[in-house]
Length: 348
Image (tube, rainbow, N blue to C red):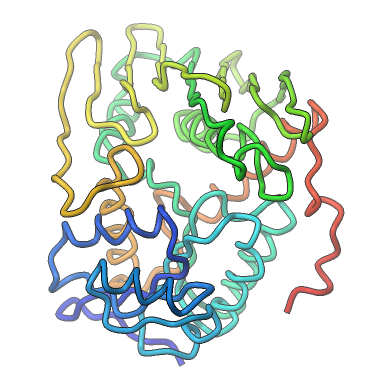
C-alpha cells in the first residue's frame, strides 16, 4: 500500500545513513517550511550513532539498522545517504518495500546495478530519483531556459572541470570503497555536459587518465563527441584543485557557470553576471553550498504531489545515460570495480 502525499500535508522524510551528506541534507530541509517538509526518522548502522544524529537535528525516531526504518513510522520518501557501494542492496530493500526514494549520486556502481534499481522502482510503482542535486539549482533552470531560446546560438563546445585534493580520504582513493575521481566528483562534469546536449547519447567517448596504486582513477579527461560536430571536454581529479567551473560556448556567445559549477550561485551570460543566493544554514555544513540540497527536496515533493514516479529534472533515463558514460570512460583507462564482475544473484 502506497502512502498518498497531499498538498495540505508535510512530506515526511526518513533518513537512511547518518554521515556527512545526510547531515547537510537535514540542515537544508530545515531551511524549508515545516508545513511542507518534516524529518520523522533516521537510521544508522548503530543505535548510538542514530540517536546522536537525531538529537542534532531534532528527529523524533532513531533506528540502529536500516531494516528498522523500512518497517518504521509512516514516511513518504526515504533519502539514501549511505556510501555508493551500498546503494544497490540498501536501495532495493526500500524499493521492494514500496518506499519512494531519493538516492545520493551515483545511483549505483555500474549500469547493471542502476537498471536493477530502476526495474525495482517500476515494478513496485514507486518514485525514484538519483540525487544529482545540481539539476535542481535555479542556475541550471536558467541555463536550460537560455539554451531553449538559443541565447548563445548553436552550442559547439562545452568545457567543464572539477578537481579537489581528496587523496587523504580513504573512501576517495580505495577501490573497495568506490574510490576514484570520476565516480565521486567527475560525475558532476558528465551530467552537466549531457544536460546541455539535451540528453543526447554521445557518438563517441574517449578517455585518458592516470591511476592510483589502488587501481582507481586519480585524474581523468573525458571527451564526448555529439552529432553535428559538437563536443564536451570533462576534466576531473582527486589530486588537486581545478577551477570547478563550466563554459557553454555557442556560435554567438558563451554561458559560464562559475565556481562551484556543481552547486552554483552565479551565472555569467555574454559577460553579464547574475547572482542566485542561498539561505544561510542553521548548523555548520560539511560541503560547499549544501543548503542548496533544499532544491532537490522541493523537486521530490513536487513530483510526489503530482503522483509522478520520476523527475523530469533528473529522470531515470538521465540516470541510465549517465551511468553508461561513467562505465565506459573508466574502462578505457583500466578501472574495474568488484561490482563489475559480481553476480547479482545474492541481492535480495
